[in-house]
Image 1: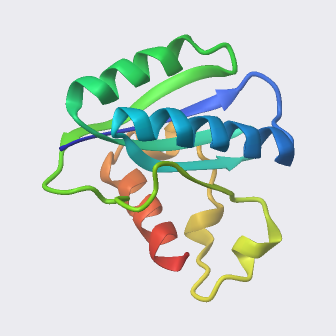
Image 2: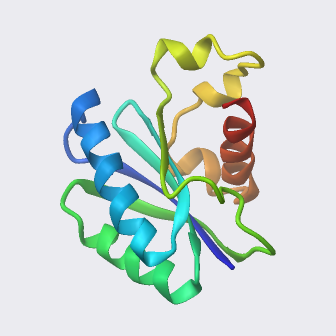
Amino acid sequence: MFCLVYASSATRPFSPAQLTDLLASCHAHNSQLGITGMLLYKNGNFMQALEGEEQAVLNLYAKIFQDERHSGILTLLQTTIPARQFPDWSMGFRDLNSPEVRSLLGYNEFLNMPLTGAEFSSDPTYCQRLLTIFKKMM
């Protein structure tokens, strides 16, 4: 199993409705490809974990890299994993600016940090910890 995590900036802000539409599209497409993962959005920035067969993940990432809705894409982590970390999510999503996130039991300011590459490039496992903590709190 292969995992890739990246951060990017939206070329223009997404509304809640646009994010919901994006999730629906990702859910349908990624299910067909056998890809699971998680998508986080905050202040115009994305962090996404993709997991599945290596070539399928890399092909999808190449399409994302060409997607005009993203800019400043930075690969944070590429690694082999023993099992899926997000097996029940063909693509999970959460807007980290939403009030529901702050009210989650166990909320930690770690979830409120920026989703830009600068915070994660010095320690690639940092992005995995963010995604894992968020998953456990959901």
